[in-house]
Image (cartoon, rainbow, N blue to C red; front, side, top):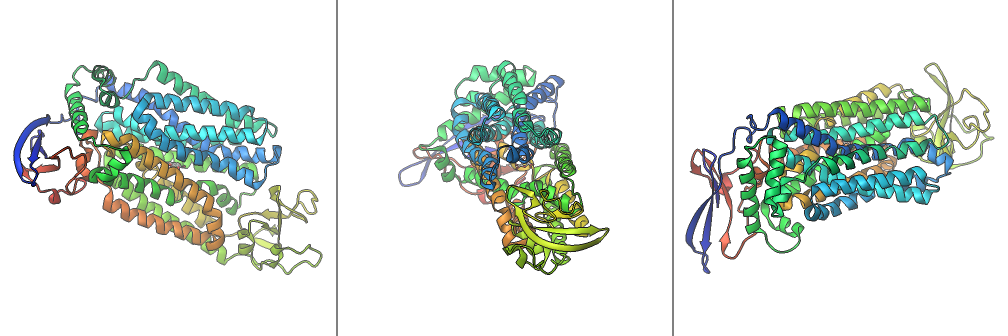
Length: 615
Ligand SMILES: O[C@H]1[C@H](O)[C@@H](O)[C@H](O)[C@@H](O)[C@H]1O
């Protein structure tokens, strides 16, 4: 039994149990001295200038991993516009080149757990930056689509490893009162990477020949910078070092990153926890041990659930779909749409900055709850916007008898026409007056034009004809635009970063690598699932149906967060386990020694059932 006394001292009480289950002996051992004010969130020992400066430098170099994650996932859409023309890519190859990276990230995030445990955080981040560099070089010199695919798979492997390692590394290096902010900086770099990628896409979109090589290859620069930073400057995490028995090095690193000699208390409590965990370590793969241990299992459910709901709230659909939403709002020029997508990515970045500012002020739980409520409402606004647009959808004129027969000619309204990926809507627009509408097959090689007729560039039958693929002209576009802005303003400070931040803190050391690997894997798997199914879901349910579905999923996410997410603000990583400790923990039973934890309220021992979350 572990008892935390009112004044902060913590005792481990061993119950020796005989064969018939009766307690025969008690033994007490002091396992932790009281946490200093700083350790519990409010003090000064860690807030010394030197310490803050070093952890900020450290967070910057680490978060370059987040930047590369954002850059490589974001840059491909603009690169694809050029690539599909230059390499004559079919729709299948375009989809393969986009989703291969995310798929590879899902697998490598899972494998990253093992690598982290064995080789440490530092080597894993260096490995990821090396892989990013190799991937960037392959992409920039790729002679054909197969080599491009190899390059995209390679950067995916880098993204997976970085996405699970960087938050863990930053969390383990940070003092408790800065941890939330510093880990959230990693997500700021992810959204920053997505924004820079859209700017680079915009800039090189004018370079029709080989522009994509620069777009994809530029990621080499931050990757090399990160590798050099880690090689010359940044140390291994003291927690991992202690776990591997390298206590001298751990103490040295701790002294270096806190920029003070008085790190003994922190060092002792990490060491006490590592020793306690060592005693409890059972047999078998870590994942099985997590599943067998109630506290770790609960942490895993919370971590994976948060990541799942992050993706199910449709962030990547909204980001991916922003260009179309903007087209609905009347932006018809491709280049302008690309620049306005950059504005969307910038909004995501800007509001993530709000999250960095809020996380240590309001705490993870309130921030996530507020964010998911706002996200749900914004998704409903988006859905209503699409619903109004569908209801006001312009009719298709009776069939022109000279037009070739196709399935497109059977649709009576623009809404049905645009939901068929083979068709597009062609019309004249005189002020607010839409006329001479028709639904015609899209050019399979270039969705920006019709296969024939006045909306096909090749024939240039009428330069004043407008071609709408994937959307319908509507006067309700402002509702959709409002929904988009509200969505980003609410999602980006909370549901964007908090799943990553919370996952980096909630697991005990023995389960941290594996726990983060699993939850990052869940994030990437749901990312693939949502983005690959979006167009099909929209075809079956229409756009407004799809967004009402995401609204429902976000509401479920709210209930999940409300019921399961404890507050981790200000706690030491070593104290997190108690947050998930509502019932007897039977993990790591060694012989007859049963260990369970009980917290103390005003000096009175509470029964395990009395201990609730979040306090
Ligand atoms: O936290 C990040 C961030 O919100 C990104 O904008 C999004 O693309 C990622 O999928 C997500 O994991």
